[in-house]
Amino acid sequence: MEKPVELILPDIENPIFIEGYPGIGLVGHIAANFLTKELNMNMIGYIESSFLPPISLIL
Image 1 (tube, rainbow, N blue to C red):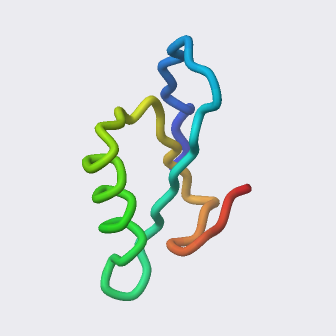
Image 2 (cartoon, helix red, strand yellow; image 1 turned 45 degrees about the vertical axis):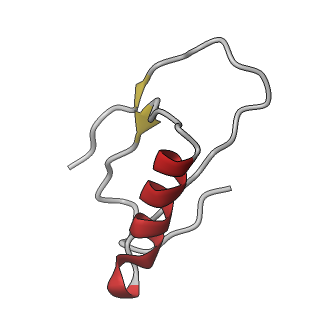
């Protein structure tokens, strides 16, 4: 099922995009969570779609 993109647009300069898709052992997900916690970042949006496979790269 497709859902619209949920997004909060803060006024920031030089934003950084971190994506962490689940792979073997959920390494991508764990690494993304670690980085966001260690760098004291906030999630500003997410995408849910059945069109994205479980392992993807979005540039």
